Length: 341
Image (cartoon, rainbow, N blue to C red):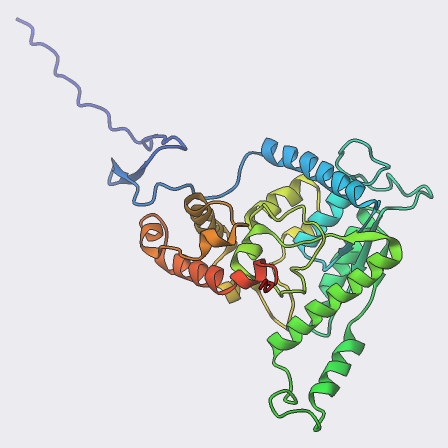
């Protein structure tokens, strides 16, 4: 009698096990020693504040119409933008270019579209200080060339030297004649820039366009009556992380998109080094704060931020930093209080 054949041992699967977790899943998977372990995420929140490309394309169209509408309401056709060489002012300048009357429908700007003798309705000013890098000025020129923007360069060195001389005047009080700290000089330059932009706008019958994003506005990361001052702001509802997404759609030069964010208020200054965290991480926390406390423009909503509830789903150190900056800098987002008897 024939013996039945011996059963072959099961073949070992040498290929790595494949698995997928949906984007909206609240679970995480780990692959260790050939086993898949799925655990609930400690932080099921999204890893980014970014939305779809379609959203930002629609945002561009709406922001262009916003600029056109606000210009018409004020009876002007010209825009003035301070071009620093950074990503925020680059995006704003590009949106303003698209909003000029020569382009009736929003289209992504292409080189030499309006260069055939037609004057542009966007005036760009580069206002480099002694601490501004040569690279930033090169980037401002690169952007102006790509989008056919008339660019004027007004260095601040003369104003800074006058400020230093005034501060060193022995006839002034002891508390004010000391040499200004880097941050003080940075704030001075920010306010001089805005004074020059408004003076220029009066000459050109134009309006000054703001370049502060939502992250900066919420954190108060700017100079009151300096870079935070403007007539209208087309990007103030977007977090810094989103500005990068917008810049790619608008075809802003890679040299501007790829460099670390810096206001260059003093030599070697970096936004993320000062804040202590990357904008990607900060923006997630800021979004969580807005979800809980409402519209960030309503200052009263943010006077009492509860750290404990926010820390349940967000890093405590980032929450504390954001809370401290938001509450300490609320005055930068409020109009002067007027006494009424």
